[in-house]
Image 1: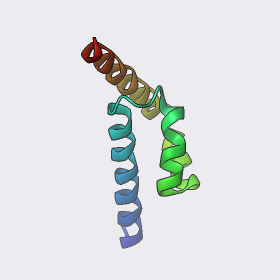
Image 2: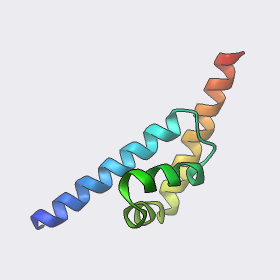
Image 3: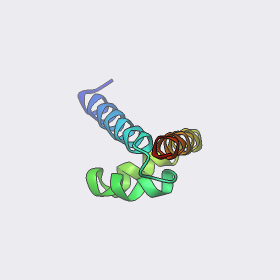
Image 4: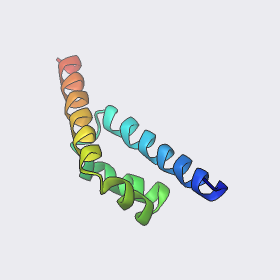
Length: 76
C-alpha cells in the first residue's frame, strides 16, 4: 500500500465518521439529508464514492431513525 492509498483510506474513514456523527445527531432524516453536508465539507466526488455503498446507506438510515426516536422521546 502506498502513502497515497493510506491517505485516501484515512480520508474515507474521516468522512465515514462524520457521516455517522451527523446521523447520530438526530438532525437528519436519512443518508440523503446527510449527503449535502458531507459534499460541502469533503467534496462531491469523495462523498459520492463513499455513499455509493448500499450497506453504508442502510446503516446511516438506521442511525438517523434511532437518533430521531431518541430525540422525540426526550422531548416528551
